[in-house]
Image (tube, rainbow, N blue to C red; front, side, top):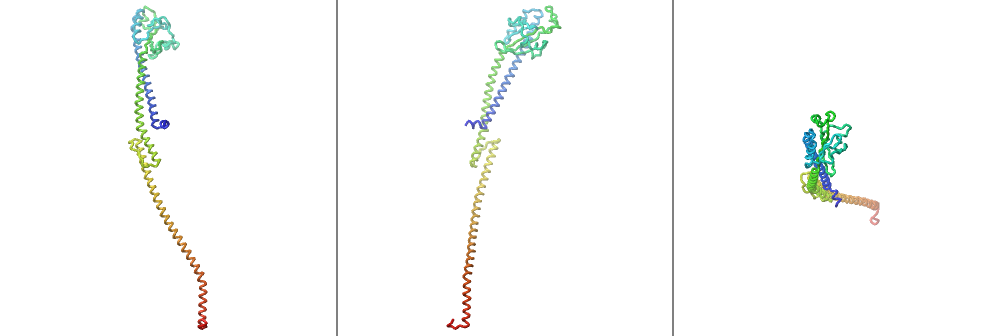
Length: 345
């Protein structure tokens, strides 16, 4: 039973269709989640870019006046906003001068780390990066993903000419880097919820489409094919009166009509063959009777011919002695007439 079920055309079509739908819906779900992730990360990147620009504009005046406490206060206030992991500023040597994490101030960052590698990958550090190269995503110590954005702090003319610090405009085009890190935990939670929704929606869609497909295949394919199979079995057993009900105007319906016409033609041909057989038998009997009558006539003629021959032989055998006797009698009669008297006669 299981072997017949697995070898059935309807089962193969169902498995092929359901498998294709699973792959298609799975790919579409994966593509949707990936595009949604990229979109949300792009939104966070734009937010980080705006926050970095806001910080640079907010601390510019305080940095020109060398009011470091005010700069730290501005950075600390913005850095404790929801969604912001940390904000820090480090100079060209990699020393952290400002950070929302006070324990990092004064430490040196690794130039091979994510935030520095883009600029320091070459022997001569780059002074300007394209917008996508300034972003990186890494996993923090607590396991959450973090999107970091570095924004170079350029040595503008009003900064290099300020009396508070002597920065040569020719030798120091970049004073430091503003590193803004935004947490992606909210996005990851949203993506996980979206994944679950997509998985549920995909499963329901696959189940619904599969159910409709199974019903369609069972009604439109399996049932007509089984009807054709049953009809061929009846015809193979010699039942030419069996016909397939009208299956519609599709290819299977056309096949059923052709099958019914074929069985009708076979039935007509069989009837003609039977009629020819009966006619042939009658003709054979007629010819047999004619042959038998001819044989009887031949036997009768043969008998008559044999009887004629026998009569001729008998007549010959009898006539020859009788002819001698008759001749002798005639001779005696003549002799008697000539010389014998009545007494001698």
